[in-house]
Image 1 (cartoon, rainbow, N blue to C red):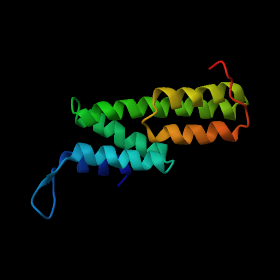
Image 2: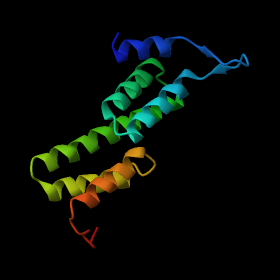
Image 3: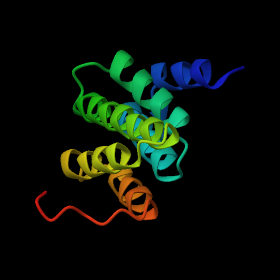
Length: 125
């Protein structure tokens, strides 16, 4: 069984803690995606956020998941630019991730990647 069907099953079934309290599956999916992001597993994070946004649309965690999906897309664009040899463009895009999505776990990863390029920051920005 692949990851996506497991997440869909997980997302569709309410979970009960040992105390009998219902655990919010949208929150659990969001936290799973955030942990995957922090670990650098962007494909896993993307899957969790996509499931969350599609199954629990309208939920506040689904809205946050959409924001994280946008951060992942922009971060991936920076990675693509760097791999293509466009280091300054990649650096600039990493900086955009940090500015626009400063609360995202990807902001720190983008900062680390930008610093690793060895490009001095532009004081005009």
